[in-house]
Image: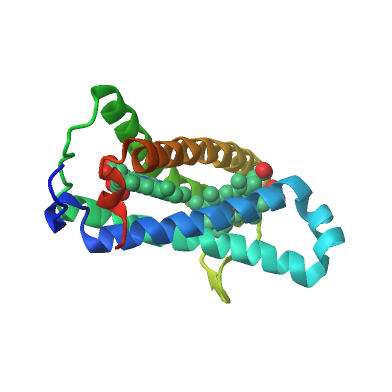
Length: 187
Ligand code: HEM
Ligand code: HEM
């Protein structure tokens, strides 16, 4: 393969957003699954009032940050040129990786909106750090319960997509060594 130049990589702002979202997503999945497994009562028993509040507020803040960064990222994705693969990907890998990338975009925009709507319709505060954000959706407990169920399912789907994505990235980086990793790396 020829030497890497800046035109072989995603634009720098897009690469920064990729890694910021990656870190925030791992934190929001870890905090979300902890809340999902323990529930409010379990979290109170284990972490006490202050710890539980911290866990909920952190989870919501990570999620709101992901929504903002994914919106920016959609803009940088449309604004900057997407580099061609050199050497070209096998058609199967191209179709699979593109499908996973698109699904991740859709899921990472939908999931925080679901969490936001589920929280607001359950009459819980939508928080970003110490700010309270507008609820947007009216209070409706039945709707809230349904949206939280979807939020849980989509959380597992995101975990599966991310596992596929990371497996693919590691395969290109460590086994194929074909420069796919360089397209997204910061250095
Ligand atoms: C990409 C961002 C997000 C991801 C990946 C995510 C993921 C998750 C997951 C996996 C769970 C556990 C669900 C379960 O097992 O029942 C969860 C729970 C929860 N999420 Fe999120 N979430 C995100 C954004 C948000 C946002 C923006 C909010 C609110 C502003 C939010 C509020 C909640 C709440 C309150 C729970 C606890 C639900 C319960 O106790 O049943 N999430 N989240
Ligand atoms: C954990 C959350 C992650 C998410 C949500 C995510 C999402 C994405 C998406 C949507 C793309 C397509 C490019 C774009 O349009 O933005 C992409 C590309 C890429 N990601 Fe990730 N990623 C994550 C983690 C990782 C990790 C941990 C690695 C490395 C081990 C990685 C390596 C790559 C590489 C190498 C590309 C470029 C692929 C190509 O050139 O087609 N990603 N990522």
